[in-house]
Structures are given as structure tokens and as C-alpha cells.
Length: 308
Image (cartoon, rainbow, N blue to C red; front, side, top):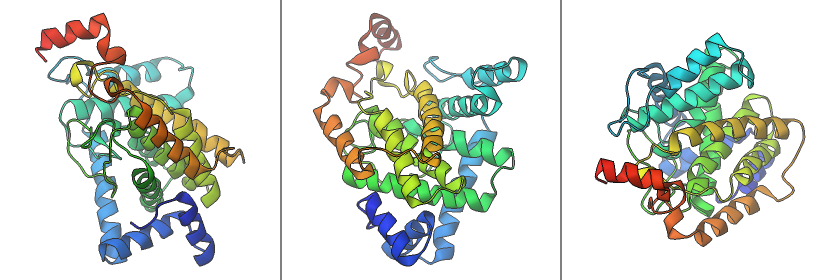
């Protein structure tokens, strides 16, 4: 894609009188020399894979390390039997985020959106909306284009990976047409995923291109400085639970944008700030497993036990 800023996408929307998602679609067609039908088919495959990954969650399976597993099932049981503080919908989002993150840790097929380590954020908000028939499949596909455009701009201006080379961990699936960049900590993975999800949600609720951009900016800004500190170097602890915060953050950011609240710092400048923060981050906090919670006494015991 040729877009290097959210402002460019907004300008394209205004000049051509088209929606955010269509601007991204047209750019994808031009960039990859594909037809609209071919591009849409590719995105449909992404959505089908997301749905399948959600449907095939194994509530009894744990990862090879034993560090994660069954949490999605626990959350689902809790929300079904109690009255969650977050309410029925948000608690479902939490459960779905845990399920997808655990599926990645258990080497199931997932969709990297934009990375495997952050694979639970987008599905966590989109699948429940679709399951409850609050959005159609076509609308979800359009929302995924919206998310992909945001992710591509973040990858272009900053990075979407926690460590150089892609930092994503297990699982399969595509990357929603975005490319992994240099190291940026978890703010680059969960932060980018949350921004993508926020923009997608704003679109689904009828927000315009400016609201989409501000929703994404607020989501990313809320997670600036989030370090990448996987225990024993595995994309499991604290990674799976961070998918939850990415998803819930997307919901709150989308609602703020839809209410007319804006980011006082322009969206593209927020992305640039994330790049600056990531580059300033010590190497021990960029997926090396040497700092943060990965360097706690308990984490060191786990690492030794696993022979990592």
C-alpha cells in the first residue's frame, strides 16, 4: 500500500467521496495489481480464518509449557454464571481475547493481526458483534479493510513488532496485508492491534474517517510505553492477558471517538511518538525476555524449570 499517513487516507476519502475502507481497498488493488473481487476474496479468507479459530478453541488444552490454557473457558463460565462488572458484551470480548491468545500459544491456526502475539484483539471485538448479529459479514469485511489501513500506516511510520524480525510467536495465518517492522515493544504489537480494532469499531458504528483516525490514535496513545517482556521468551505470559487490555481499550477508545472526543495530538503524530518511545526502550524490554516481569524471581524459576 502507498499510504504513509492516516491523513492521506482521510484526504483520499474526502477527494473521492468514499469511505475509509474503500480507500484502503482501492490502494490494495493498485499496490498488488489485483481486482476488487480478488482483494475482497483475500480479506474474506482472513475473516473465515478468524471465525474458525474462535470456533475451534479447545477449552481443555494447555500450552506445551503449561503456562497458559483454559483461561478462556474460565472466563466464559464466569460470565455465564455470575454478573460480570464489565457487563455481558465486554465480558464476552474478554473471553474471546483469552481464547485466541491461548490458541496461538497452543500452536493453533490464527490470524496475525498484525502479529500472532496480538492475534486476539481484533477477533475479540469483531466475532462477538457478528455472533450477536449486530453487524453483517460484509460490514465485518469492510471493518477489516479499515483495520488493515491503520495497521499499514503504523507499520510504515513506526513498527508493529515487539522485536526485530517480526516478534510474533506460534500459530499460523496471515498478517492482514501488513508487514512486521523493527522492534518497538508490546506497544507496537498490542498497541497497533488495539488501534486497528478501535478504528474498525468506529467504522462499524457509523463513524467517519476522522473519527476512525482519532479512535485509533487514542487507543495507541493509551498503550504508549508498553514493554514486551515474555516470561521464558514465550509468547504466553503476560502476552495472552494483554490481548484483553488491547480489546477493551479499543472499545473505550471507539466510544470516545464516536462521542466526538478527539486526540489532542494528531493521529499521525501519535504514531510517530510510538516510534520514538520504542526506539528509546531498553533492549531488555523488547521481547528479549530479560527485563520487566520476565526478570522477576518467579519468572526466572519458570525459565530454569523449562530449560529455556
